[in-house]
Amino acid sequence: KTDFINFISDQEWKSIEPVSSWFGPSSFLMSSMSALFQLSMWIRHCHGYLTENLGIPVWGSYAVFALATLFSGLILGLVSEAPETEWL
Picture: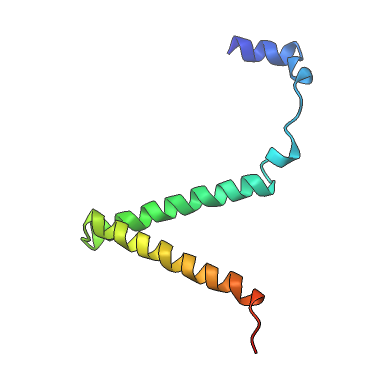
């Protein structure tokens, strides 16, 4: 507590460089990190729902997420390649 009060009263904060806009809270990078953390919490919630409420074993929940990952990769791959193919 004393160090913090001295930091403010001695104006040591003026010697610290501000955070780069790239690492600011509203930057694309930090927004993406926030979205990933929110996704991980949603996945954790879904895992809990599958195992606790529906009674699916843990390995079954992992299998559901593995299949969802494979399916979403397939869809993203097809969508990303569709503009590059020539439809004759």
